Image: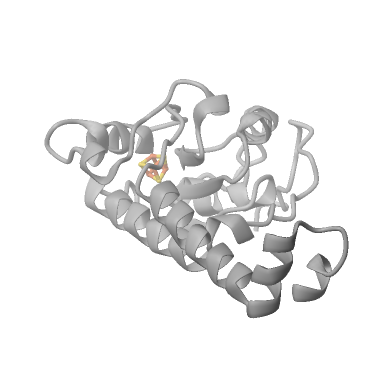
Length: 190
Ligand code: SF4
């Protein structure tokens, strides 16, 4: 990194780069930003099926995810976490993908429930067999439905992941092919 600041940079930046202080500063700022980002996750308010009821319960007073800085937002443009809660149909797949693309970077995805993770009991022509076929997933929460405690555990795991990865070093995840809405990713029923 030091070589990047050898010419054309202000003297203070050059001095900082030579002494290694710039690296220390960047690392420290990254830690601060990552702590801030992880402590104030804003998931999008949306649900697809019965798992969404547990998702709603997690935000209600008994479980109160607000205490972790998790504040649900009504627009993808204000959200940095997508909790996919419920069965994703092929017809809905392009909409889920569009919502994901409307979220600003950096962003993360939690797949909640076995329907979201792998189609659940619905191994049919109409059901997407795993949301990771259309968007990248960071944390999977198994169960049918997972209880709010499981979702809270996933949120805490995501917070640790964000702090470890570093928000300034976040890279956009590779995107799977764009879903068409018809017959996407469904193998013949065995
Ligand atoms: S995993 Fe169970 S609770 Fe969740 S959407 Fe599927 S059937 Fe409903």
